[in-house]
Length: 443
Image 1: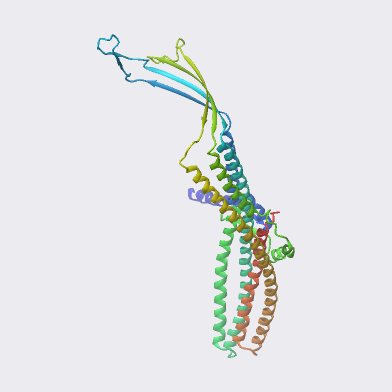
Image 2: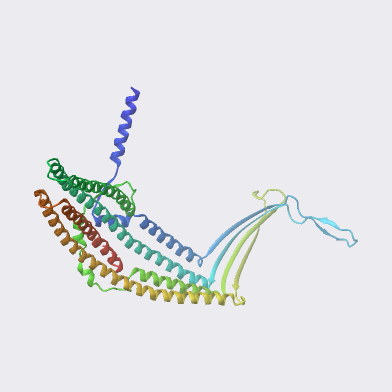
């Protein structure tokens, strides 16, 4: 009886787990929006912004009032002894000064009045926040491109499997006819073997593509920020995405360098180098701070500090501290020179970034236009290859052509099918690259 109870419990648990499995249906646009909220890179970028905001506040507090408290308790296990000749007779006498135990409690309020390094550091922390925000924007663009490519790879795998299975069905029909013809003496054994080879290759390609599809789904889950085994249903087809991503208007959009995220990041890198130079220069300036201290002390040979009759002695101190750099054996001069060189290098890199981004935009436009042209050519070639292969099938069935001619037509068809599928994927991928090159905002 217990055995059946365990079996039923196990089945109920398994069914419960299956019910809890999450299935997500996504169009490509849905997948992009989902990834922008849930991807690992997006979450990490959001945390970087949080850290940057805390860094800004941390730097700001350096110039705000600081309050510190301290409590010191001392208990001499063996008190120090002083020796002195009090009577002037050459005889030293031993004395113990102070009590065996004492407590000192104090509070100190300090305020930075002027420090050039602090002012530069405050600017630098705000620049760091801006860099983090721009890094998040860059992450979103890269996430969009990664999702588009991963989504497209799945559709390509599924389309390839669909075509391969259709090819296998056609080949099975031809193979069956070849076997019948061979049995009746109307075909050679080589004809049968040739189509058996084709069948083996197609089935091998189906198995390989099925495995690639499994990996492609896992890659998309990673891009989305999901566990890799999350079940996904893709609502878009390869054909619908090709139609949606064929947009010739992108080719006439002017390249705007100033709004490009990579250019902004390069500008902020230059600004960081400028602030580093300002920081080194600020170290030549004096710093000024003020403080006020209040403390109280108590002394006792026994631990009586909490007794009502314990005497406490107060003290208070107000002070100002001025630190003036005078001479560093030209060390500070060398550091300033280094930061000037770093700033010059940043200017060089900024100009290089301008040229590279302009070239990338032109190249992306060219690649996108080429992908559209190649798709149109692949579509025409596929139609021609299908007609040729169909005619060769009819001729072979009627016995007026050889298996060699039919095999050539089939191989040509398979090549054009692969080219057509790749051409569709290229339109989707090249459009994503162009949108990033032009810094097209995510809708």
